[in-house]
Amino acid sequence: MLILAGTSIGQVSDVSRRLGPALSSADVVAAEDTRRLARLTAELGVETRGRIVSFFEGNEQARTTELVDLMRVGYSVVLVTDAGMPSISDPGYRLVAEAVAAGIEVSVIPGPSAVLTALAISGLPVDRFTFEGFLPRKPKARDHFLADVLTERRTMVFFESPHRTESTLRAMHAVFGPERRLVVCRELTKTYEEVVRGTTRELVEWVEGLEQGVRGEITIVVDGAEADEVELNPDVLGDLVDRAEATGLSRKDAIAQVARETGAPKNLVYDAAHS
Image: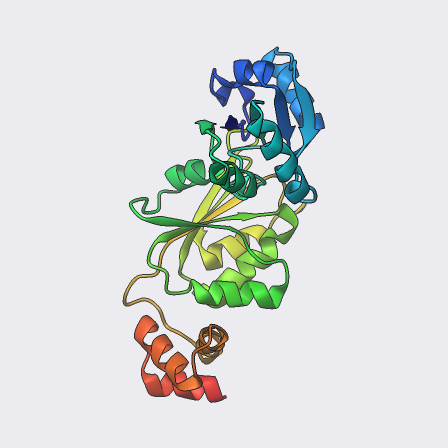
């Protein structure tokens, strides 16, 4: 059996009461960081009787095979990551997929989620949303990604590292425009929790005013595009055409698709694609 166990995103008392017994009774505990697991079990006041193994991005593929083989012969495995739910922007998806394919039972111990916590506290629409994870590290790839979701109507949730938050907010200002609403959630559920709401212009001004830069765990919630608010500049339109062509469309079909999806005049998209 495989158990995906959610851990706290800040306050250890937020975790499920089932977490301690699951950790103490498992044959194997697979942890993204075994040192953090040791701190977690100490705070919960439990001892693990089973084998503890590391399970992180660098060894996930090899470790998945090993863990599935153990579960085939009857071992129970509990998977935990540093914070939140395994496989949600953390290691775990590959192990779940392989376990399901092998006919192994998969269960979940629910726990805190930075995605849902930030969404709930944001004050932005929650009826429909997308989770976009971490943006690409390289500026060009990041800007292309943001251009792809420029016309997304649903609320979007992103994770970001503190040292890239300022550049990400600047990129959102450039791509989404100065008036798109967004919310920066910092250190959710922790002592120095902070939620900053405003437009992209206001959030850029906020981050520029921080003397010591951004610190802590960051989740950014972005309002979806309004049907009549998207004003596309030529650079953004050109990027959208490039991305559409990269999927295999001809230039003509890519231009038609971008015009249809954005509502921009086809001649405007054509000029942007050829500029």
